Image 1 (cartoon, rainbow, N blue to C red):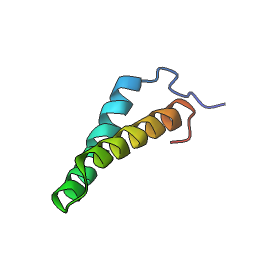
Image 2 (cartoon, rainbow, N blue to C red):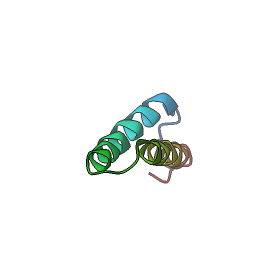
Image 3 (spheres, one colour):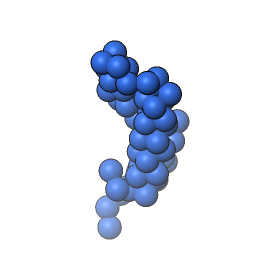
Image 4 (cartoon, one colour):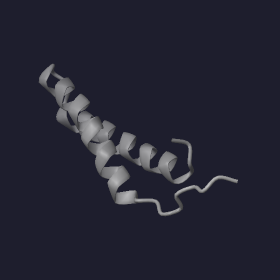
Length: 58
């Protein structure tokens, strides 16, 4: 019905999500969170954002 943009930019979505999550988790690391946990949170949130972007949830 609508002209949806069918060309999905996975790399752009992943980069945007990783930067956003990285900013938040870098603040958490500065407050004492272990860096490995912050990295895992960044990876998981990036994967979730890419999946949502591909399935038109966002």
